[in-house]
Amino acid sequence: MAGDNSTVYHIDSSIIQVEDDKPYVRIVPFKNGGYLYFKSEEPIDYAHFVNLSDQDGKFWSARLSK
Image 1 (cartoon, rainbow, N blue to C red):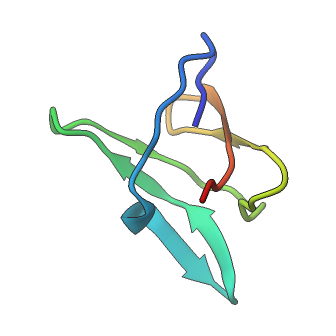
Image 2: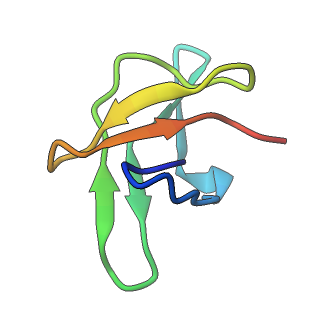
């Protein structure tokens, strides 16, 4: 995931939620107790970045990696 300032975060795959056989990012927890909540209608995939908006309206780009 990359935020507005192009910082890249590698997140654990356990945060992926599968709905109708498609992967979505819904909640990303952080070690400090914080979290990001996403309500995306677009599933993420390996080939393309998907633009996501969190609960505060901040935009992120995400894609799955192997």
